[in-house]
Structure formats: structure tokens, C-alpha cells
Length: 359
Image (tube, rainbow, N blue to C red; front, side):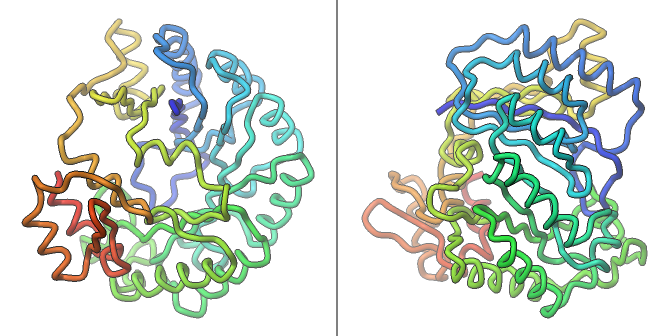
């Protein structure tokens, strides 16, 4: 089931935890970027008809609805089985929701991250729990009842009690899908760089310990399970039938075309990636260069570490990695039945230790 990813790397503000190549950028760059994006889509060769579309970034929900509709018309296959748009709570309106629906969007992903005022203030998010509740009610009224809520475990100042309150909001709002990400600490985000530098900005000293973050995650797994929202991938949970069809293709290694800055593509054998930033993407168009900057064969081991992200694991010939798999079994990280292998609950928390074996 092939898909399309559209990158819109523009935001109203840059969140402290964000490590993507996106943020607040000049209006003129945005105009040039959208022209380049249209050109890339129009010049694409379509070896298949896409079944899913995903608009990420960035905050594609801030795109002017008329422009978004024009871009979506360039993608074949409408009506798609699933078409998702990422949104920042606090910016949704009934008019936008109607325009998305009429343009073929049938799924909305809200970057909530937390329902706690203090945690939200530290990250740069502008919404409140009440705003999220109002916007979800509006989406349902507009026929967009298929939505996802993102949470981050490990935000500065987060405690067992505040995490539980965010999970209680999940229960009240009754979403079909939830994503739970453990905070990433790296130099690509302002918060991560501050933590690594032992600084004090952005609440860096109050980032919970790795052990606490793991505990928050496991609490979420148990709480969501009681609500009938089951984990189907390390960071993704859904009611039966509400799994993200688009995201599943990444872990199942199904083909997809990516358009825009930092977008990735995969045809089943080869991977390629566009210029990382909006400015570099626009510059390549101006110079008449291909949008893709990196092209390489798929790694032999990627099928294993991608498949193991799924709750059901995967069936495969593990012979090339038999020694490592036996070690993982002894360490309680992996369990096997015949040719099927899956991560244990402990293995999920230490998944990077497993995945590095296949890179």
C-alpha cells in the first residue's frame, strides 16, 4: 500500500524539544517553498497510485486552506484510504476543518504533548487542555472523528502526578489513536542541547531521569490498555482498526514518495532524501538541481529493526543475526516462537540496544 509524505517545515513558534528542521521562517521563503513543492510534485513519476497521504513538518495546519487544496489536487488516488494532517492545538477552526475534509483529509494528528499548563509553558506550546477538548469536539462535529493525540514522556518538571493528569485527559477525550514519545536528548533541539551542556534554560535541570521517563511510558502503556487503546508499535497506540495506515508502511517497508524539505522516499530497494532545510530545498530548485541530496540502497538489516518496532514483531530468517538474537533472548530483550521474534516489555524500553545490531 503505497503512500505520499508532504513536508511543510514552517511553524508559528519553535518548541524547545523539537529536533526537526522546522521553525519560524520568513514569509518570502514560505512562498518560494510552496512553489518548489508544487514543482516537485508535478514533475514526479508515479509508479503506483498512493493510498495514503501524510502532511507533516512543521505545522501544515497553518497552511492557507486554498493553497493546501491546490497541492492536494496534484496527488493522484483521491479519495485516499487515509490522509492525515498534523496540527498545533489552538489554531484549528471550523472553516479549516471543512476545507481539510473537502480536500480529502480524513485524519487529524494533534501535537498536544501535555495537558499540564506548567509543562506546556516550558515547551513553548500555547494551548490549554480546555482548548484541546473544544477543538476535538469541533473536529467531530465536522466529520473528522479519526484523530490522534501526541504525548511526550519526560518534559521538564513532569512528575508521576502530572503525567497521570495528562493520561486522565486522554480518558476524557476518548481518542481512537494516541502516540507516546519518550523525550529525546540531543543537540538538535534547544532543550536537548541545554541538558547536554548542563545549562538551566528551558527547564533543563528539571528533565526527569531516564528511569522516571521509562516509568511514565510504562504507566501510559498500562493505562491506555485499560481504555482499549493497545500498543501496536513502540510509540503508537490505537483502538482496533484505528492504527495509522500511513505510518505502518514505514515499519513494513512499503513504498512511499516524500516531497519537500527533509522528506524521505523509498521504492522497496532504494532510499533517497531531499535537502534538509527549507532554504536549501528552495536553493536547489533555483539552481536547477535535483531536490534529493542523498540516494542509497536500503540497508540489509533495516527490515529487522523496523519490523521489531511492531508489537506483533515479525517473521524472518534470523540466521545472519543468530548469535545476537540468542544474546537478546538471554538478556530478556527479545522472545521468539519459530521464525517470529518480538521485543519483550523490557526490550521495548531498551530497543536501541537491540536495533544497533542491525544498523
